[in-house]
Length: 335
Image (cartoon, rainbow, N blue to C red):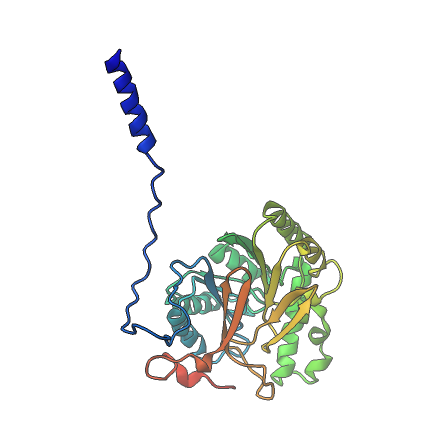
């Protein structure tokens, strides 16, 4: 009996001595200095151990009067800035043709330059990339869907097609555009401002099909609680009234934080709409108006913290260790 009680008492003693193990301390960054008393010439010795945010880059139009070498410079600069991935807002090739050989050459050229990026790149089509049904089919065969979405670290990206017309209307726009180009080049008499193409609403603000609208409505239903939503497009669909514009989708977006970004005008602008940021980017190699101070080459960086921190960097100010822009710097000029 005494032995039995002794065993019980010993067990209770050992059990009572057990404590919850201390959590393993997180190692702090090594920071050494030789100041032993008084103030220190820094604000804090607490360093962020592991970033919870991420940064992505955005390029704008490089076509519509592309200036050789600027996009290659942007690729080199992006590699130095090292975002997690890079997005586009369209007009990646000159396009505007039904010649498959020419389209292949232009896309091969763009892809060869883009392949030098050290991070993923996400395509988005503009009017130069999706000018006619032939180019639409070429895109599908080479790149897949014209509009799509993805989620990264609980952030939703809607990649829209602002050239989303019925085929008949697309051909009407394409043919009117071809005529307008002949007027601009002096092959036909008249003023560009008097052409049918100049007067078309789609020339400025694009269009969106009901199928695309329904697709993105379903995406938003599937992801109701993401921490942020980015909406990217080439032409500003949000400027178009009626059911071909962004209005119906904006209604679906109204209960969540979101940001809208597009290109097309080759001139930077920002405004607040529905309490959200709407930004039109400048250029990343596209044609520029020398009289427009907001027509400049830049790269956009978005750091996704609690909310987006958006920084637009003029390419002429992104320099390497020698104080020069990376390869192609001499091409950073207006045309």
